[in-house]
Image (cartoon, rainbow, N blue to C red):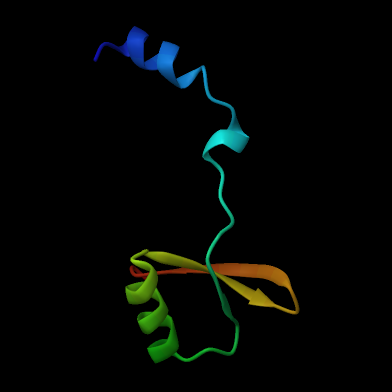
Amino acid sequence: MSKTNFVNIASKKIAKDIMHIPETIKHDSTITDFAKKLAQLDVSRLVIKKDEKHIGIATTKD
């Protein structure tokens, strides 16, 4: 695919078309809880929440 074709295809979508609600985990969860949730959801990162606020992101690289 040429760069021009990619730009034409990509420009037809807007942010809300590709956005999703992030998967989260509570700030006081254990590493075991974190690993289990990653495996269950088949993801490599989770947003950390405390009091309904996003306070960070934990990844498999952390």
